[in-house]
Length: 77
Image 1 (spheres, rainbow, N blue to C red):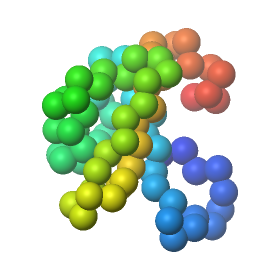
Image 2 (cartoon, rainbow, N blue to C red):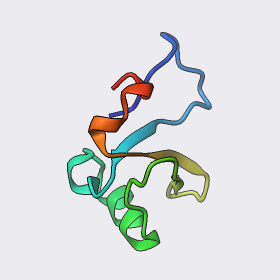
Image 3 (cartoon, rainbow, N blue to C red):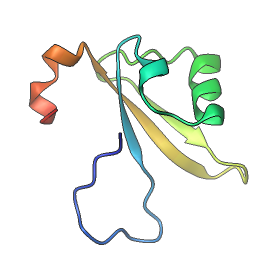
């Protein structure tokens, strides 16, 4: 689930998805994003991030690892 900090999104904004450790399958990601995350070995480890390429090679989104969900209160989750 992306976190939105402003009401009006700039055109150049991209979503940042929070991913719990070993929670890729439960993160609600689309097929290509999920496949990319798996191919790169991203697993939601706390503090790890991953840029997700779009079909044109530009950044389409980012994944941010939150580690264990019960330890992510600092993120307001």
